[in-house]
Image 1 (cartoon, one colour):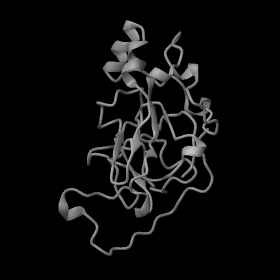
Image 2: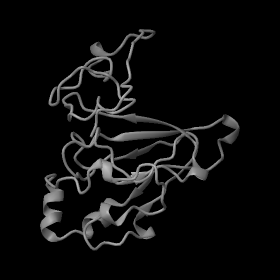
Image 3: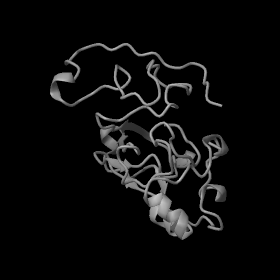
Image 4: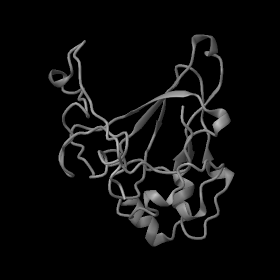
Length: 201
C-alpha cells in the first residue's frame, strides 16, 4: 500500500464540497483489505476519515445550508493539501474557520479479512499511518448517468479516456456492469493507457 496525507478526491467528488448522501456526484468508494489467509484474524487499519457530521456542525448556519444543498465550493484546492505529509489530524485550513481538528472527529476503521469499507471521496480522509499500512483494493462505483468532471484523465496514473468534461462516462476506462448486455464478456481483454505526465496545475 501507499501512505498519503489528508485530502479529498476531486476526480470522484464532482464540483463541490459534498455530503456523502450526494452519491451521483460523490461517487462511493469501496475498500477491501487484502492479506494472506494466515492473517485472516489480523485486525487491519482502514482509510481514516474526518467525521462529516463534526465537519458540518462546525460551520456557520449559512455555510451549512449551502453544504447540505450540495452548493458549497471546495474549501481548499487540491494542491493546498500536502498529500505527502501524513499527519494524525487534518490541517486546520481544511476545516471550517475557527474549528480546531480533534481526535474525537476521526473515524478510524478496523477491518478483518472479508470486510468491506464504503466511504465518500468528498470526506476529508487519509491513508493509515506508514507503520499501519496494508494492501487494499479500492473500487469506485459510478451510476450509469455519471459524467466526467474535467479533472480525471489529467493526473499522472489516470486512465487516458479521450472524453470531454460533462460527457457520460463510457469506454474501457469506465467498465459498465449494468444493464447486463453491456458487461464485458468473461475472458475479454481490455487495453488501457495511463497518463505519464500530469497536466493538473
